[in-house]
Every structure is written in C-alpha cells, then in structure tokens.
Length: 444
Image (cartoon, rainbow, N blue to C red):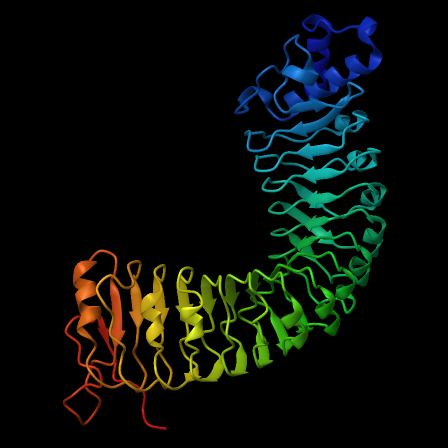
C-alpha cells in the first residue's frame, strides 16, 4: 500500500528521525504517502521528491510557511493519477492545494475540509467522483477558492453552503450536479465568481442574487434553469462577465444592465428572452455580445469602442443597423452576425473600415439599396461575407470580387442574391465571384 511504501522509505532510506522533530518526520511521511498514492514515479516533474533534501525548499511543488511547515502543494498539470490520500489532513498548516489538470480519480477525502487554514482547493480537470457538497465542507470556513469543475462529482448544493462566508470562487462546472441553486448562495457576499455551467441544475436564479455586490463573473449556462432574470440582478454593478447560455430563461433583460460600466462579456444566447436589447452605450469595455436565438425585438443599440464579437442572429430585431457598430469598433470588430432578423435600410458603408473583421453576416433580413463597394486594402482579415436573402439591388461591387481574387485562400465565402428569382432572368445582385447564390427575399 502507499502507506507501507512510505513507512519503508522513512525507516530505511530517509535521514529524518525523531531528533529532527515529530512534525518534520510526520510531514515527510504524509508527503511520501501522497507521492505513492498518486503514482509519483510517473509525474511530469518529481524533482527532489523522496530524496534526503529539505522538502520545504527542494521538493517540486511544495512550499512551507514561516513556521517551517507545509503550506502549499502546487502540482498542477503534472500527470498525477491514483487517489488523494486522507493522510493529507495531517498537514495541519496546509492552506493551498492546487492539483488541477491531472488524472486523479477516486473520492476526495472529507477529512481535508477540517484543515484549520484551508483557503484554496483547486482540483479542476481531474476524474474525481462522489458527492461534492458533503456535510464536512461546512468546516472549511476559511475557504476562499473552491474550484472543482470538470470532474465526476454528483449531489446538490445544500443550504449549509451559507457557512462558507469567506468564499470568493464557487467553481463546480461540468459535473453531474442536480437540484436547485439555494437562496443561501445569495448570502455569500464575498463571492466574486460563480461558475456552475454544464450540470443538471433546475429551478430559477435566486431572487436575491443582487446581494452579491462584489460578483464579477457568473456562468450558469447549460442547465435546466427557467424563469426570468431577477430584478435584483441590477445591483451587480461590478459584474464583468454574464454567461447564461442555452437554458430556458424568459422575460426581458432588466434595463438596469445599462449601469454595468465594467461589463466585458454577455453571452445569453439560446433562451426565450423577449423585449428590447438594453442600452449598452455606457459599457465601454464590452467586447463580446452574443444574443442569438432568442426573441428580442426593437432596434439594435450602439455599442463600442472595444467590441470584437457580436452575434444577434435569429431574433426579431428591426430598423437599421447602426453605422456606429462598425465605425466605433473599426480596430477591434472581428465577428458580426446580423442574420435572420427583420433589419431594414441600407448596409452601413463603414463596414469596410474594420481592419480585424473576419466574418460579416447580413443574410436573412430586409436590407435595401446597393452593396457598398470597398477600396484596395480594405478588410484585410475577411474570410466570409453573407449578403443573401435580402432586398438589395445592383451588382456585387468589383472591389469585393477583387478582394476574393487577392485572398483566394482566406476570403473563401461570399453569398449574394445572384440567382434569378422565379419568373425572371436577372438576379437582384449579379455576381461573377460569389461562392453561393440565393434568390432574395419575397416582397412583404
């Protein structure tokens, strides 16, 4: 067993003895058990381990505090396998365990939650199983970072989670967790991030979620959560990232989101949201906005100046596409998807000024007028432009065809209404360089 192997090492190989102090002897024994339990001979880096040198200074991944006792085990991405032994609970000064991105299996020892100074527990991207939120977890009252995502944990979040008052990171995404998000989560006012996506949670977002005024990052995506976004959500004035993708959320987006000055990313696609897109003109740091496949209506707000990714496909948005979407973000915009709405008016000519633009989809709307031409040197990063299924007129400009000729391996997709409509011989947008042709929108 790992315990027997560690005992043999202490007894017959290591120089440590009782004269060095019982604590030092026990620490080396416990670390040896950990080494054998996690197949230490196969680690990516096991420098110093199970040699006679000081484990505090010479064993890879081990750090000690000012008291000379083990404080940190930091062995992430190090090809650990096997199981974590319960003996680690004997390292009474251990505060920081970072073992993410390994191949550790088995159950996590509950005894470790009773460590008096445990602050950081990061076991993400392993194969650990069993119930995650065991009763013993409430003993870890100094825990600030609980990062257990991408394992095989089960169970639900209990109301007892309210005992973890120091918690800043609640990360348990991509497991097999069930049940609802308890209201008690809203009492953890130290939280800065909640990442619980890709589980089997049901119910609704807690009504008092707005109590978490220090929250910067929330991701509840890919669960069975229903209902609307609570009005208290507007109190999250420090929020930077909102990810609520692929659920069954309904209602409108609280207008108070316009007060989120630090907002950087909003991904709320594939829900059942309705109503207008809130004013985002104060969100100067917003670079990623994905609202696709909802039922948003009304006009497209102005966003900038750092926007990189915009996806409002498959909604019911109307009116013109603001020129400012392109002119304010000419140095940053890479993706712009407007497909399958009811946008009207002309195509903003400023799209050609976007030096980073790769994908531009205008298809499936009611856009009119001619397609704006581009100049030599415009759109140096472009790979795809979709003009089709609109009510545009005139030939696809020579400048765009010249660009396809200049970038044959990069600009690989150009769609327009270059196929004659039924009963006619002339297409809406004659094109000699398009890779795909459609007929265009029927008259309303």
